[in-house]
Structures are given as C-alpha cells and as structure tokens.
Amino acid sequence: MFQANSADLEYLFESAGQKILVNDVERISVITNPALSEFDQKYIHTLEQVLQGDMVTLEGERYLVITESISKRGGKYKALMRHCNVVVEIKNYTKQLIGHTDFGEPVYEDVYVDSTYIPSIIDNKSFSIDSSSAIRVPENQIVVVIQDNSYNREKFMVNDTFSFEGNYKVLNRDFTKKGLLILTCEKSV
Image 1: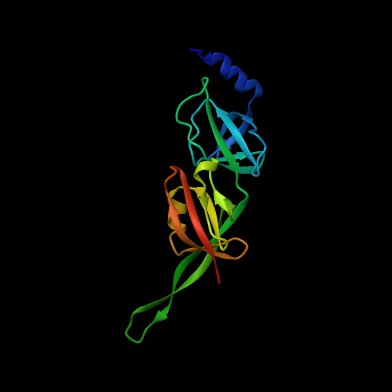
Image 2: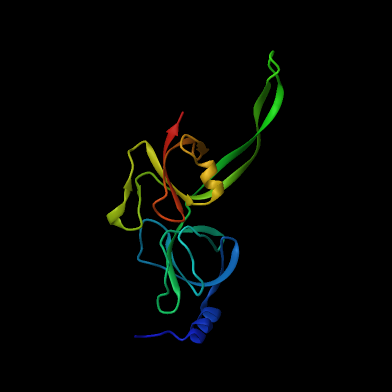
C-alpha cells in the first residue's frame, strides 16, 4: 500500500502550510475547503493529531473541530472544522456578604465580576456532521455546540442561562461526541 514519505510531508507543510493556533498553541497546517455548504467549514491537515473539540484560530476567526481524527490518512491527520458563528456571553458573579439575619446567619448577594466569551456554533434547526444523524429542535429552541472542557461543563449546567440575542436557558446537555458539548437551549423571559 502507498506509504507517504515523512520528509516529503514535512517539506510540504513547511512550504505550503500556514500558521494557526490549536487551543492557543501555534501549529503548521494545510487548510482546504470541502464542497460549498450552508456553513463555513474547512478541512485541517496536520502532522500532529487534532482532536474533536479542539478550538482552531485561523486568520483571526475561531473554528471548532467537529470530527474525530484518530489515525493518519496518507501520513497526516485530517479533520473537519466549522466556523464558530456566535460568541456567547457568560456573566461571572461572586458572593458578597451584605449583612446578617436577626438570627446571625450571613446574607450574601451575587455581585457581577466580569464576563467570559465562549466561541460557539449555534443553529436554530439542527446540528450534524452528516445528514444522517442530525439533532433536530423545535421552533423555540436552539442547538449550541461548544468545546467540552471543565469551565464550559460548570457554566452550562441544565437550567443555567447565558446571553445571545437575549437570554437562553440550557434544557439538555449531550456528551455523545467526545470533545464537544452539545446543548439544547430555549429562550428565557
């Protein structure tokens, strides 16, 4: 079977590749375009493994790797990434002591500290990597796909809210795609 020459591949990546950030670490990759679709998607080709859920910064834009890349293809790794079309805002609060009850128990108030902005893929119809396994949602709901990490798991719990063109409440969390946190959310009043 055809075996790629690693020296030739390294030369190709050094001469034709471009610098990108994968989870804020600089790497050299070759970026190609799949067939034109409704979303801005790109193939990322690397000599080092790129995992489903990795956040890629390409030309100042954020992309989320949405497919697995377990083994090499032709001596390199290849995965599909999709443009993060929205940045959602998570407001961070701290508890501040404001006094005590008549029984001496402390009374706290949530005080706004700052906001964290999470690059996300948001769709009001469905999310899928291929047309055979789409997650469909009702009219009043959206699907939010974000990187699965400890911060996002803590901030996007069921019934938590976040800001995006209004406030949305998390109804369901799906962990079936390793590296991705897929949320079903509903606009809250």
